[in-house]
Length: 162
Image: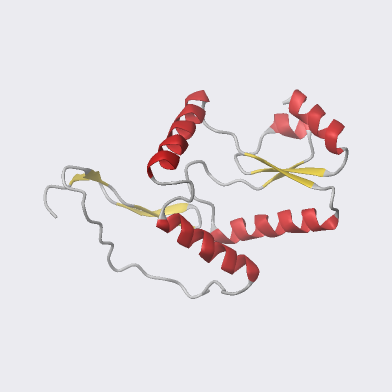
């Protein structure tokens, strides 16, 4: 950590800013000026927080052409890094560098949201049914979160028919 902090200070002087998107870490605060903006591990970030972060990045980068954004995300272990690399290599080989169609749709949707072309509907959305297919012989469990807190969870169940 000290080596990374020294490299940032040497190369970018005061033109870098670190955003920590994992749990708050005291060792980061000792070495660097850090904005803690994390969310619980293994959960997708809330859309409003993700938009807020992107806007903060943009404001910082626009403020000075020399500014640099550093995003810190602590993984769970060294094995997590290896697993992530293996998944990325598999995806690049079998799916393509551009990713799955759902990823492309999400990126298009999110960029439209950030640019103001579309807006988030503030009205609540109620799920009355969830349909999942092609899971015969698998264990299925559903967990629904609202504002990062689980509000509903099914018990794991073997799927024996479609």
